[in-house]
Length: 122
Image 1 (cartoon, rainbow, N blue to C red):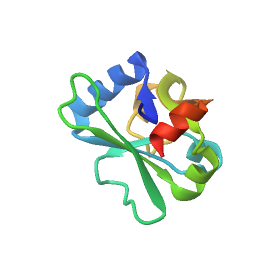
Image 2 (image 1 turned 180 degrees about the vertical axis):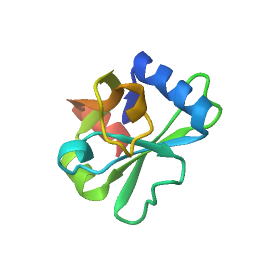
Image 3 (image 1 turned 90 degrees about the vertical axis):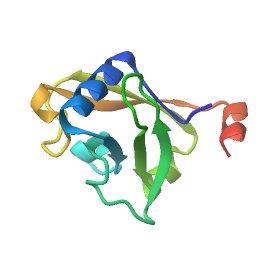
Image 4 (image 1 turned 30 degrees about the vertical axis):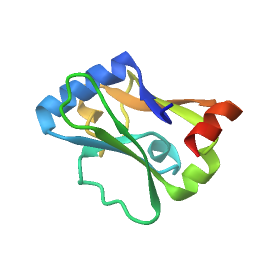
């Protein structure tokens, strides 16, 4: 059981961005507006620290290395009982996220974890 998954559309965009930019990472801050969406950066471009939690090292077909998915610790405390799915929709997200010029944006779809899933993750 993984805590984070990607839709086929998100995987396609990740492959494209990886081909253009190099290894990638996601960070979800939990802030308002664009901060509530997952932001895609070059791996290591966003500095993570003790206030962040590594939720997943995503394996995406066609991408050689895992794509790390980080979340601010304060946001994780609120979302620790959820399964997250990275998806992509039309529209413009943050200018800091790599997909911004593509006319699409990443977003998170979530569902509550079952008690069994939660136990398996903790």
